[in-house]
Image: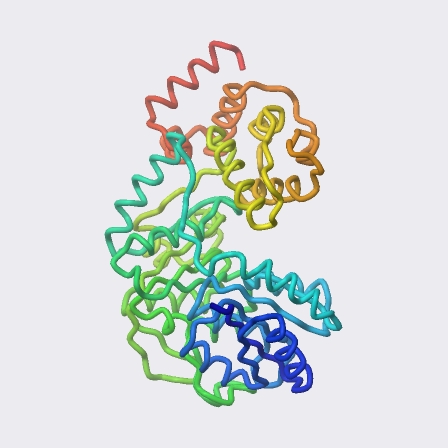
Length: 424
């Protein structure tokens, strides 16, 4: 069966050439210069890949991507543009584009990108990896949460996999057959964020030439994952509170509320209790969100999971890039377990990907990882350092520290006594 590609660009001659060239390579292509036609096709047909220009007169590429993601959250999406810049590249990847290619390009170059992106399945089953006690406790809590329909607040540092956990909650819930829609409050300016979330009526502002459903409406009967809610401006916080309390939204330019049935999963890497004290986050919204908080542990607090995570990523990357078999040497695993991973699981994946691609050897050694030299410490010493750091951050509040570390108060007291005896 041929791989189906949706191709959108406002330049008719380019569209014609790309359609012909890709069809000659064996792909089935629906090409159009009209974003509305492209969206209509997305609703009717399932595509294996979407390719779109960024600069278009009616709907720009970023807006088009977000609308596509409302229907197919994980379909591979490649941007093509003559307006290449670092800002555009960052925006493209931040909006969850799969790839980015600058005009002019050869058809062979595009085909390489197409093959790389269509070799990844449109939906990879959620797989949260971790056998450590800390992760098992988190997964036990997740199982209980997923069976309910309550609002969830995911707390964790950047790179701990908050979207992955949100998707797992959705997949285990009674809403699993409906849409899972995501958006980050930090990804868009305030005015655009409001229109994306709640929609708008024709004439609500300059350029609003037609009514547009917001993403909360798109997610009706499904799950909405709202990332970085700690960055939401006050005007958005008020509307989110109304959504949670009244189960309704009001689009920009309208006075008529729209009922929506959405389960909200919010996430942040900020301490909302601090934001609350500083007056940057609403108290009523904080308590409405904080019904069931799920704290995702940073990678340095579950070092036992690092080898299995690294092996999993290495297997995925080698298969995707057709690299053959690669093996992690004990020296590389030891180094990874001693490193603190400020970027958490995301950083680990990037390090493994870089090492796999750049290594000219079957074996991936410590020097292939590109990690800074680390002072030699045992795992028990590193764990003690982390316990002391968390207790200090919690200003000696043992209950709060134990909750963050995922252990009981008695267990934490016992570990602190052992540390004190060793004079550390």
